[in-house]
Amino acid sequence: MTRLLKTCHLIGLTLFLGSILGHIVAGAAAGAPGTQSFLYAREHIALATQFLTLPGLALAVASGIALAAVSRLSPLRQRWLAAKIALTVAILINSAIFVAPSGARALAGALALSKGDNGAMAEILSALRIEQIAGTVNILLILAIVLLGVFKPRLQWRRQSPGKVLSASTGASNR
Image (cartoon, rainbow, N blue to C red):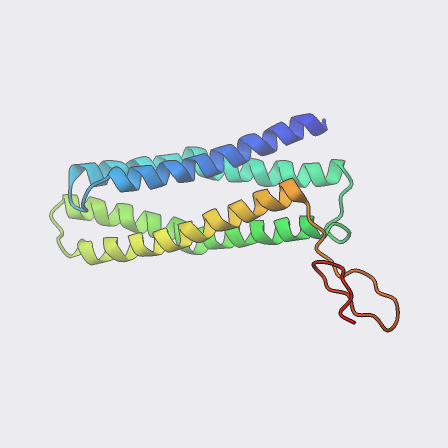
């Protein structure tokens, strides 16, 4: 069961991160706003988000929860797991508040621009800027989650004997 869940978790992560990298490539190859290739790229990004990014994120989150339950890992005891959960929640919030709405605004602006609404250019550029910043934050958070999952660092203060102060990272005495 654990192997199946780990496989699902890796597939979900691959779908999620891979589609995001695909978004980056499509955006870079899109050309300038107002061109047919820009509109095509935004439509491609919207479809990939709907059929790859969001299902991948859902699979990664669901399989991660199931792995923690099956393995009886507690985020209260395993601080690295608590950190992964917190970063995952940050990705969900960032995606819901910034990435998805800005992507939808960019596509709506591209459609309006293709119909001759030249006033949509400022909206497109604003949406792309927000999408780029929030997307970069998500990629950095994903990489941090992967590193936490691979290395499972001890993220806790070590117990100390009275009169000694220990460093959290090295355990060395400051005295």
